[in-house]
Image 1: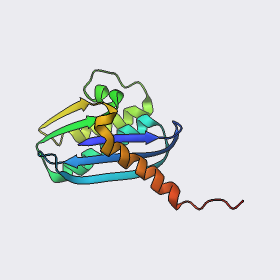
Image 2: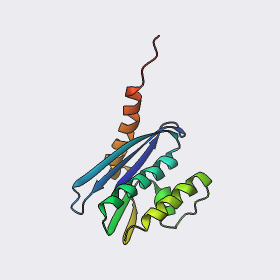
Image 3: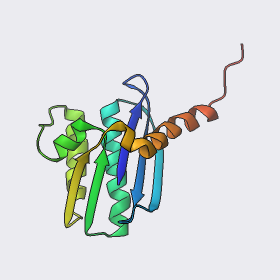
Image 4: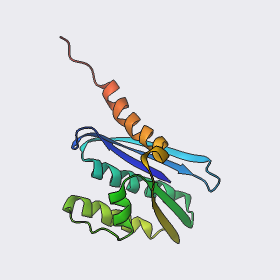
Length: 137
């Protein structure tokens, strides 16, 4: 599973993208969702949570999670503490969802290896703004 969150302004308009693949790297599901105004870190955690919720329904025993958010990956691996109270609530939700898997591994990857999830997150934002009527001048 590849996850990404995007925020334009930080905080600003935010979206998430998730790409779920099978063990042969064939796409199973793509998720994109507009969040409204949020920080990049909230978007990153929300992408992880939405992805874990979706994968949980597929009932696999093993899951590999890839993200270009070093903060989220290191916090989920226990290498960084979660000091922000808003992120702590999201972190706790993600930890609870981890219990649905027999084995879960987190990988921090470079942004260029996460293009599909990044594109979905940005599409979510772009799609929302394409629906909003432009003011008449």
